[in-house]
Image 1: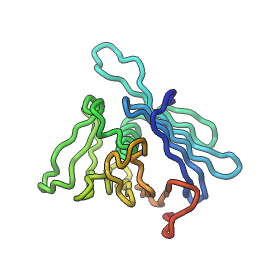
Image 2 (image 1 turned 30 degrees about the horizontal axis):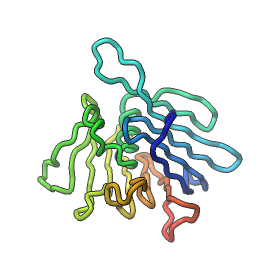
Image 3 (image 1 turned 120 degrees about the horizontal axis):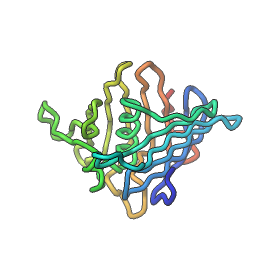
Image 4 (image 1 turned 30 degrees about the vertical axis):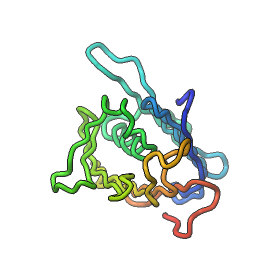
Length: 198
């Protein structure tokens, strides 16, 4: 859990078809983040990434854990772990920070489009396609090919990196298109936009 978060964002949304409140806190100086999504009656989900002690021979060790609506807490593994880190680091702008180079592999897209790149964890198996706004270079969409299909994260409107001093990079509205179907939508603030996902 982020102990001394430097950045945070919150708002309302739709999660698994239900109205929700969400909060996301993260550290621009490291990989940690914590997201809480709460629906009515206090039911909530928590996902967090934190550094842990590295095993012998490892340079870095990260752990991602999730607590579901039944209060069951478990570690995310393999592509679940990688997709959580990739999507959240893109969503928060953490992927742009110098420390992220120790964890991420960023490569040009094979089609040569300068506004698209391949993103993955170093030594990871999950590869994503990150599309950037041609003017601001802010994330517009992240596509991740997972075992159950394709997950898409859409960011609207794209926010320029470090738009204004002290303001988080999180987009005004984020849509998470789940591979098995359905859309979770998260928007900053207390009022939904005109077009509500899900």
